[in-house]
Amino acid sequence: AQTVTQSQPEMSVQEAETVTLSCTYDTSESDYYLFWYKQPPSRQMILVIRQEAYKQQNATENRFSVNFQKAAKSFSLKISDSQLGDAAMYFCAYRNTSGTYKYIFGTGTRLKVLA
Amino acid sequence: DGGITQSPKYLFRKEGQNVTLSCEQNLNHDAMYWYRQDPGQGLRLIYYSQIVNDFQKGDIAEGYSVSREKKESFPLTVTSAQKNPTAFYLCASSIGIHRETQYFGPGTRLLVL
Image: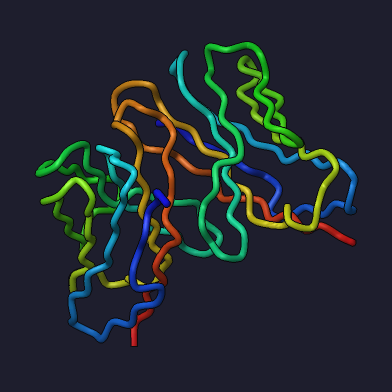
């Protein structure tokens, strides 16, 4: 069975600095999707970035980028030029491309942004 | 504006009572999902539906029921058989079951009186 692990329950970053959130996963599949979702205090889940496993190029969305290491089964999120609005829970998620279509979520990392 | 709405925002359940959480989407998505979120845990899948009149159990379906009579709507009933219903419930949808990106509603907080 697939698993997703986020080993950092909480992280802090100074405003305008860069922070990296870690995520590792376990799967025997060769093709899958990986996601980072943000959950602000409003608690609505917002898609930050996604990565297709068959793509070697790391995904980037403005200040957010990932470091996808397929062999190591690692999928970290880098937030550059951190802003106060980035403060939230961040969840890493995995999804197969076939079979069951459910997401498997990690337990989340709470990011605090210090002014 | 297209999106997913959930109501109510807060819901209180008495012991032995069934309650229904509403989820509506106007994104024309075929697939819809219900997740439960507990403190310190990630989201866990309760039920999902690929198309109208079809739904499948997720990992924690016991004590819950769903229906999918319309494409836009996927209500979740928390039955009296669910002994620990206090949680945050999130509804999501995707264009189709094969499309990987899910979009989430704002959630419903269920509390037991």
